[in-house]
Image (cartoon, rainbow, N blue to C red; front, side, top):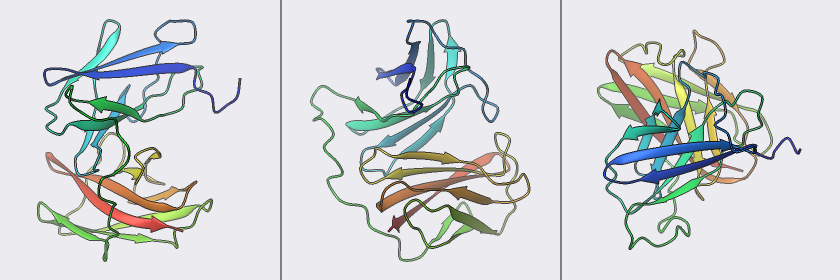
Length: 216
């Protein structure tokens, strides 16, 4: 089997403020999952204009995982991040149509706009993103400097970074290079605009700092 071919099929459904996730391997069985950063499943849900972002950890009950969430837009995309034991798995975008009148997702109605500066403030904490030149097929370093606070460990790391492209197809989930730094390494397969959410915990609050940048 091609190493890029997924051996686990994933389905996600939404009804009455409730998300259900079902997993099935090529034999029709529920795959055994291994824990990744303290959780069996990381579920990322974004609205298809990339304005809403949710990082969820569904609970397993019987043959499915589930979580409560109230979604207000008409269409979203889900990315299910899991580590099936002994199975190839490729994270793919799963489109969610919240109501029957939703049109199939055809791309962003309004293109992303590149941030003029990479400094964001949420909850009194200021985060700046410093990067290498962002080029396709080259490893890049993403460094976050934080003012007015020190992040605390969250899910086994000082931070989590999720990156999604403008087409809402490419998904990247990375963690710091060490337990002491808010520095991340990653690589981009395609050029274009991307939106990044950097999650840091301060006390009981976890903030997701959004950045939009271009990869050339």
